[in-house]
Image 1 (cartoon, one colour):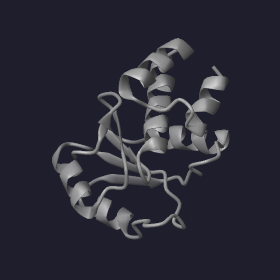
Image 2 (cartoon, rainbow, N blue to C red):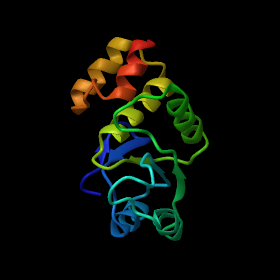
Image 3 (cartoon, helix red, strand yellow):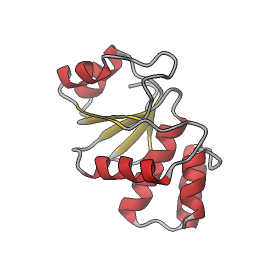
Length: 140
C-alpha cells in the first residue's frame, strides 16, 4: 500500500483504505486491519469489515474521536491489537490517529520511555500534539 507508514515490522498506519487497498494489503502480507473511525465520520466505509474479511484480513473497529483523547478507548485499542496477528494496518481518515496509536502500541510492546517515543515520533514525522499520543506521553 502506497500510503501506509511503517512504524515497526508489526504496526503500520494509513488514512482510509479503499476496497482495492485492503486487497493489496492482504496480498502484501498484512494480517489485520484496525479501523479507528466512527461510523458517523464523513466518507466512512460502511462495508469495510466485509471487504477486509473477504480479503482474508482480521478486522477490528474501535472508534476514536480525532480531537479528544480517551485513555479508556486507547487501552481498548491496545487490548484488541494484542490479540491480532501481525503485521497490522491501523487506519483512520487521514492517518494521524492511526500513526499515534501505532506508535503507542509499539511503545507499550517494547517498553519505550518518553525520550525514545519522542525520538521515534520525530523520525517518522508523527505529530506529538495528536491528542491520544499527547495524553499517552503525559502518562509516561
